[in-house]
Image (cartoon, rainbow, N blue to C red; front, side):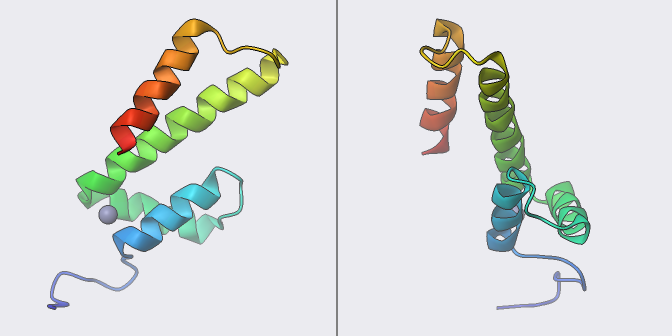
Length: 88
Ligand SMILES: [Zn+2]
């Protein structure tokens, strides 16, 4: 494996995914988020993953804020299902 393209401070896709997941629970540090931002500048795959993840957490947050504990609105449920499907 060549390290030519790996510059100091750059992280792997695996690490980027890790930080992204933890960011949702506010468990990542500022430096980690900066590294993630740098990573998604050039990595299309992780860029899409981060976008999908933040969309999903926004949806879930909205749901929690509404205190509508019983049912998700139909459109939101479909949106979530789409997200989950496209993840596979
Ligand atoms: Zn990546």
